[in-house]
Image 1: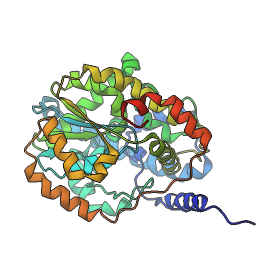
Image 2 (image 1 turned 30 degrees about the horizontal axis):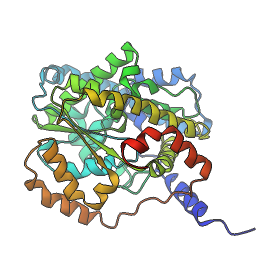
Image 3 (image 1 turned 120 degrees about the vertical axis):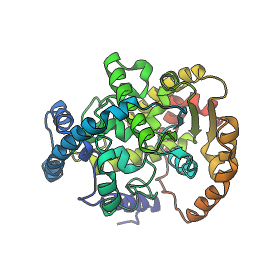
Image 4 (image 1 turned 180 degrees about the horizontal axis):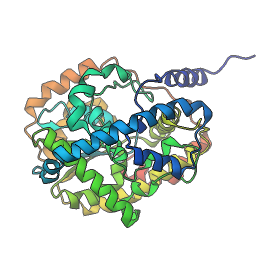
Length: 385
């Protein structure tokens, strides 16, 4: 047999690595209440692969804990959460998956004046006010040190995207598709662009988001929220109305980097989170469709954002000069004084200087041509011609 091409070897090694996600580590579904868990299963006809039955059994065993603790949090603290007012408008980081939203989120979260939801809060929004001191602080060993889709650090105390909290709260979010990745059509893709979302889904989504933002505001003693989620990209117009004065930071990246990295993201998450053994047959079209949905929303809704409340930057500029780009964000959006956080960002980048990005297989010309054709507006808008 001939030698295996280097890029195929690299992809194979990465695939092997991502399949080593420990069986005992949390999955998104561990955060669901009994009703939401069985609703998810019923929606897909309980088509769980035999190899995933043990995982499903463990999740089923944990959902009563979530339901009981959720009831306790609602009884003891529900009134406090409901009466909480978000006095300072949040800052939302948006942009397509793998565009650098996580990097930007971690850089800006060095500013202690922001309230940044952590992984435990996003995975246990039903009862984090009750249980974080015990579970979140003392069971950090449950979470792998690195995320399965890349080499970035993970942990209960790390900044996390609030879309996972929305999922746990039972709202319609496209992340629900990871439970049954082989099924079509995917769950709740309409929520990638809230302009195209059904009224019922819109109300459920808004209720979950408002609950979670109030919860984190109360938990952090009314600090300004710093939230990040790629699916929020096609929601900014609605958020601007729900949170008057909210600020938005959009980060773009070259589509030829976005596409293969996003393909790998879904392969990784489907393998780790799926209740089916993922065949990945639908992923290519899913990546194209998600991009087109969210940027239909973004391009229309960005015109609804008041002047000075939206700033756009490029990933390539951020990695070249992280301190300078972060300072521009503070200046353009008129945030807090940047000087107290400047040195913290420098120290953060120094600590992460040995971080190695994933390498992806060489892209074939057919895929490159399809990306150019279907994402032409993005190429032009963000200067990637």
